[in-house]
Amino acid sequence: MVAARITVNGKETPIAPAAPHTTVLDFLRERGLTGTKEGCAEGECGACSVLVARPGVNKPTDWVAVNACLVPAAALDGQEVITSEGLATAGEPGVPPALHPVQEEMAVRGGSQCGYCTPGFICSMAAEYYRPDRCTHADSGHGADPADSTDAEHGPNGFDLHALSGNLCRCTGYRPIRDAAFAVGEPTDDDPLAQRREQSPPTPVATEYHQDDSAFLRKSTLAETLQLLRERPDAVVVAGSTDYGVEVNIRSRRADCVVAIDRLPELRELRVESDCIEIGAALTLTEIERRLDGDVPLLAELFPQFASRLIRNGATLGGNLGTGSPIGDSPPVLLALEASVVLADADGERVVPLADYFTGYRQSVRRPGELIRSVRIPLPLSPVVAFHKIAKRRFDDISSVAVAFALDIEDGIVRKARIGLGGVAATPIRSLATEAALEGEPWTASTVEAAARVLRGEGTPMDDHRASSLYRSAMLGQSLLKLYAQTTEKVSS
Image 1 (spheres, rainbow, N blue to C red):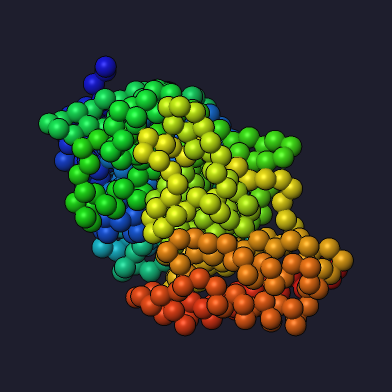
Image 2 (image 1 turned 30 degrees about the vertical axis):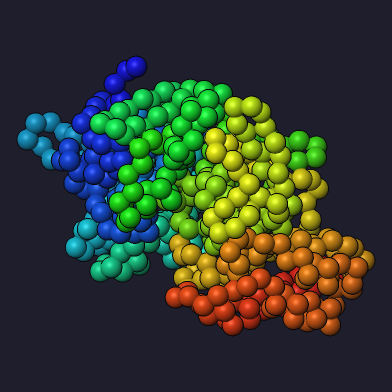
């Protein structure tokens, strides 16, 4: 087995002697790359973001920004990382490095004050700068006027501000940062990071990284992984580590054995069949979003509200379902879509409807040694959909209540209704009573008002620091009234 290594700013760097739980953030800082900062250690502030070369959607390779504070260094064995220091171009001896275009714009437009968050912003901005399908308006370019932007979240240079939704700044203010983002031009032909996109991404490598009694393991195939999990049912399974990384940082969790599945090709497929869409459990949410390109409208509503772009670049549907959290954002949507999960172990596979998957608080029917291989969404899709997330912040927040709707309405009658709820019970649930109150009834104000009263009584909402039980119940009913207000004109036309 080849020693575990990461290519950092073009230089191969051994991971040893770092412990298997050591994050990329600590690994980089211990090697003098202190532009990568720790702010929250939970993936909420973005001060730690770095670029990783990943399989591309529109080109062979994409530069993807991730939270270095969450990802174990061993998880990037064989991969390529660029830090804020690596974006600048080195000059002749004695000559300061030339700033990267993103760094230049941040400097000249006053996007940095204390500078603590700036390297993280730079890396997130660079990922968007190199996004292959970023469309620049014909009359824009380097130095384009941000006032020409067609909306508040997209610049005339095609820059999507959602790329910065996981980055926080506490002293500069966001206007100069937005100005810098909306002013960057296109990568030049001789830009080495732009050229890197045209080459294949790093080939996945098997990893066996041991230190003392701890191990970080990655097998080459799904079959090998399932056999390993049979032998080590106590192992912690990780993909993007967006949940496990928080456990390591905040709760000092130290697993004896961690098994990575994020690079397994069998878990990274997305297939559209005549009767279903099958999404691999290890595809990141960003990859799913860009590959589907709006073909599943309810998922398209979910993605911008799911944490931040930095988190979505690592998080997976398999991970979100695997944790069993009652406040995960994807389960209500997948329940409304009548999705099933494909569970695999060393003996074979089984398909379980998601409505039967959760059995209790952070508990499910998944047995020791089993993995979520994929998520299946049946076709055709219901035409009337909505995802309502009630949270204290518009983006990058945990929901107090999440409600997903998928309705078939024909000739003014609700033929089918599927409603998924999160944050109102020990598990994500289907709103069966409200579905029954809607089906077969006319899509009218009186029907909706009666069904909203039923919806307010669904689940067993509790009081906590995010919301009271009464507020949660009220928001359930309000969400159906909101759906009716949003869709009446569409349905009637």
